[in-house]
Length: 445
Ligand SMILES: Nc1ncnc2c1ncn2[C@@H]1O[C@H](COP(=O)(O)OP(=O)(O)OP(=O)(O)O)[C@@H](O)[C@H]1O
Ligand SMILES: [Mg+2]
Image (cartoon, rainbow, N blue to C red; front, side, top):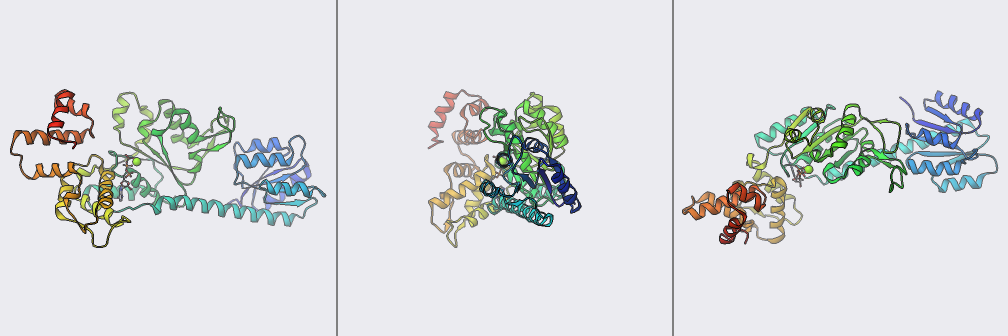
């Protein structure tokens, strides 16, 4: 294995040869360039751990070259090589981010030792940065295993696919825990030391999405004032999570397909391709085959994504999980008073409800209760009224036609997440009539 990748920029052929020979013998990968311009060009297809950079160069001098290297890649370490009597410029270079300098004629051992230290430091910095990224995700995770049969199946698939590199598509309604499952796959994989990088495809316009994904070179388009590393590159050795994949623009789908097939991509404004070693996880709350029929998703992309798919069932199909999750969210809440608990009737009411917003909705109900109440026994009076109304109707068989109607309207409104036009459609009445009935039954009191 290579000890590190080094770029040596010097206009003297003798120095370039010396470095190439001696550093290669010590197990480093060395590429040389005879000018600043040539050296910078090499950053298009390579990433270097260290640059050995002569200060005196024809045309673009070492100081300017250093400044640009730091713009492209702040992490790359740079050691300056200066002529005798050029100490002042060397100090300027340290201010610009070079780690050290040697004066010509230099002792090879000295340069080798400095180079070794610089590369070691860079590797530690990179490792720590990855850890910080990862911890940010995991510390905030309040994960709990859901005990239902349906979820056990999901966890089994997670355990089976996590160690492999295969692409995984996670499907499920909003709030069922797709993000959480994606993170579980990452932390149970051999890539767990690498970064878990998320891109929400739904939030991005096409141009932005491409440069977010693949990065761009400075000046690639107006507004690109700096060279930027894309998320794909940041996920090298780790996992790239493409969330809301159903919302991705058709044009970008073509580019994404190529990346999924080859793991190669091109930064916006670049001519050369770069390859990364990344695990891809995708998530969507859409029916992608439906979207394909409508022409919103390319067929080839869908087949490429749908290698292994995990369907996370909605909460209403796994009611055993409801009390477990509700109790868990209560327990981990910072405002929880010792001894506080959800009464049986409260749990029953929760089980009866259909949770269109799934786990996210359940969590927010518990959070609201904790903000509003300091009773130790949390009765169903503390629950939002639509949950209780739903429960009472379910429990006591409705006596009148009106009650039945109210219950039906309520459940349809839940289905449509409060969208009255959709609800009116389903109920087969016009919006005005629905509005009158909502008013009559005081549904949104
Ligand atoms: N097993 C679990 N343990 C603890 N919390 C969970 C679990 N599953 C989901 N949650 C919580 O439920 C909420 C919704 O989960 P998540 O964001 O993963 O859902 P999603 O399916 O990605 O939603 P969306 O479709 O809106 O993106 C989050 O706050 C998450 O922390
Ligand atoms: Mg999500």
